[in-house]
Length: 111
Image (cartoon, rainbow, N blue to C red; front, side, top):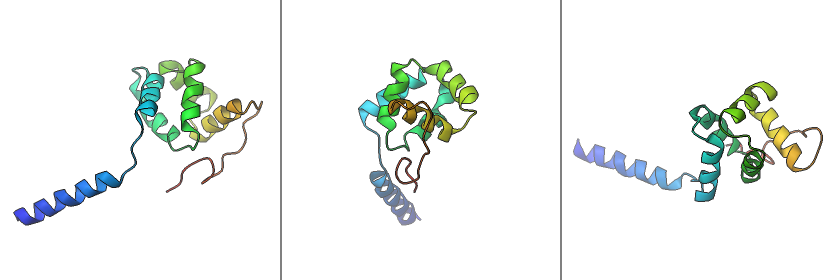
């Protein structure tokens, strides 16, 4: 019985090493945007799937869309759609009036 438990622990440690981790600077930006409002965490996790996630987080901080303001912006302006949020922010980063389409594998990581 102990051998089985030890094997499972070893296997789980190997899986932890293979997972991608976020850098300290990205983590700091995530906490800046979260600003103590924990409801933003699932949304921010989805933002990290974008190829441009660091630039997107910088844009959010620069435009003071943090904490409750970010959550309201996401729910009311983007109607709770992560793709609409991504299209809006990427469009603003690229100085476009309207958002452009989001493409899988190019703009958004798909497992």
